[in-house]
Image (cartoon, rainbow, N blue to C red; front, side, top):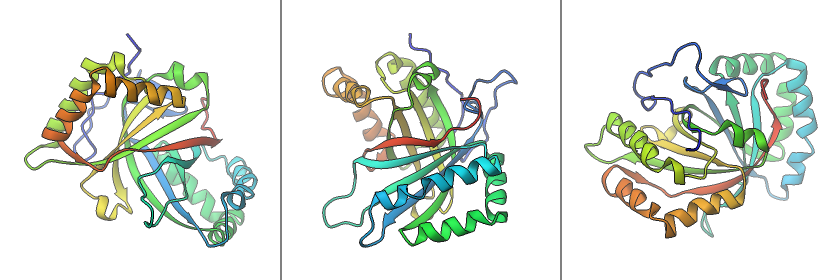
Length: 261
């Protein structure tokens, strides 16, 4: 059976049952604890392109190294976008992941530096960005798959519990689904994100954030859902447990990796 490191955690609105001191860590994050997930959701300004953003990446890397910020930083570009023609678009997302305390220390160091605020100002000339902070809860991780490549495709699906369904029932459903279907699940990691700061209309909802190491792995999961019986679990979940907006897929590239990688 695929090695699944399952943390028996409730969703973010409930107290978390922490594992012992031998809990698994990956890239500096204890997988049995809530961790920081920060999204910087960005729309390019008129006349600007992603290449204009990428020209600033060397400065980002240099500042992170100088300030010794121990977090992972990924750039997400839309692959299968939930945005329909005529709707406002998200052109890219900067995703930061790591220990919650490390994120706080990183922000303090960034804002106290001379370079950090100046770079934020220069980025604002290229794109309009909004920061969102959430708590990540690990449900499953295949560290061997993640360590084998830095290629990432990440899917996001915002959901809300159906009327009368508690978060404890959702947690139990997630765990039972994983126990029954883990062998067929081709993802390398599955996290649930509980939005906190900047949540807006997402308050009270949660996100399934799933990582794959290739498009082939993503489509293997789609094939299992379509032709291997996986649709039954999806249908049961959407009928009885949660109302979801539908998945979007993003190609992700590491700009910075946390220590331990």
